[in-house]
Length: 508
Figure (spheres, rainbow, N blue to C red):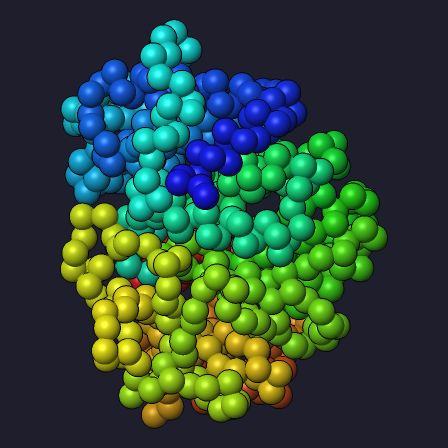
C-alpha cells in the first residue's frame, strides 16, 4: 500500500537506477540522480526548520532538476508550488501574499529577479543543495508521509476569473496515476514529449507517469514553442512515442502542414485535453502518423486531479463532427445536473446540464480562499443524508445517442442575444466543424450587442462569404456580425486560447 507518491520514486530509482528519467536541453538525468538530488533537497529544507505541510514556492524554469526539487519538497513533507519565472513582479508578490510560503527555492540567476520585489521569504539556492549533508535517507523520509498529505498547489484561474490555488494530495495523485498508466499502457519504453509548463496540471501526468512506470520524459525547450518545426525535430531526435498536448499545439502543426516534411514514425500514443480538439486536426495527425495505435480525448478540471472523463477514439469522425468527452474515469464519479439541480440521465439525449465531480479524486479546496472553496465545492444535492462534497465544473455537457458525454460549452460563456440564450462554445464548435477556418474564438461584445468571430486561416476571408457559409450551419440569431482575421491565435502559457487577451485587444 502506497502512503505517498514517493513510493513511485523509491521503487523506480531502485529498479532503474541508471535509466534516463528526464532529458532537457542540457542533458540527461537518471532515476538514481533524480532521487539523490531530491533527498538532498529534503534535507536542506528540513535544515530550515519550517515544519510540515507548508507551501514552498519553486521559482525555477522548466529544467530536469525542477522535478527533483518537487520531490525533495514532498520528501520533506511539505507542499511544492510551481510558478513561472517570467511572471511580472506584482503576480509573484500576489502569490506570495496568498501562499505565505515558508521557503522559496530558486537558482542564482532567478533569485536575483526575486530580490527586486518586496519579498522577505528565505530563499534556498539550487546551487547550494548539492552541498547539503544527508542526515535522513529516502526510505526514512518516505515513511513519514501520510496519504492525506498535500503534495502540490497549482494556481489556476480556469477559463476566467482570479487565480485560485488548487491543493492536491497524495491520495488524489496515486488514484489517478495508477488508473491512467494502465489505460494508456505506459511502461519503461514510453518516451513522452513534454510541452506543458510546470504550473499546468498536465505536468502532473508527465512527472508521475515517469516515476511510476520508469518512462522517460523529454522536456521540449521553451524557446521552441513558437517554432512548431523545431518541436517536431526534437521529437524525432529523441525517439518520442507518446504525446499529451493541448489541442492548440496540434493545430499549429497541422496549420503549417509540417508532418508532410517531418516524418514522425515512432508516435504510438496521441492524447489531448484542456480544449476542444478540432476533428480535422485529429484526422490530419492520424493520416500522417503511421505508427499511431492509441488516441484519447481527456477532460477534467485541475480541481479533480488532471482528468475526470476520457474517450478512447474507437471510430472514424468526419471533419464536420466533434469528439465526445466519453465517460467518467473508472476511479471517479461524474453527475450532470440541470438548472433545477436534478440529474440528467444518459437516456435524456441532448439535454444540457452542468458537469459535476464527486469522489476521493477531488482537491481539498483552494488554498487560503474559503469563499471560493465554498462556492465551487458544495454538498451533492442528490445525497441529502450524508456529507458528500461535489465540485461544480461550470462546464455544460449532454449525452449523445451512444451514452457518451459531449462538451457543450461554459456556463460563463452563455449570453442572451436577440432574446435567445446562446452558448458561445456551441457556435465555436459548429464553425470548427467546417473547413472554412483553421481556428476560432467567439466573443460577445456587450456594449454593441453583437457576436464577434475571431479566426485564423491561410488568408483573410471575405466577410460576406463567411456570413453566407455560416448561415448554412447556424441559426440566423447566432451568426456573428463582426469578423476579425488574425494570423495566429494568442495562447496562454498552458497553451489554451487566450480569450482575455483577445477581449482586451478587440472589444474593450
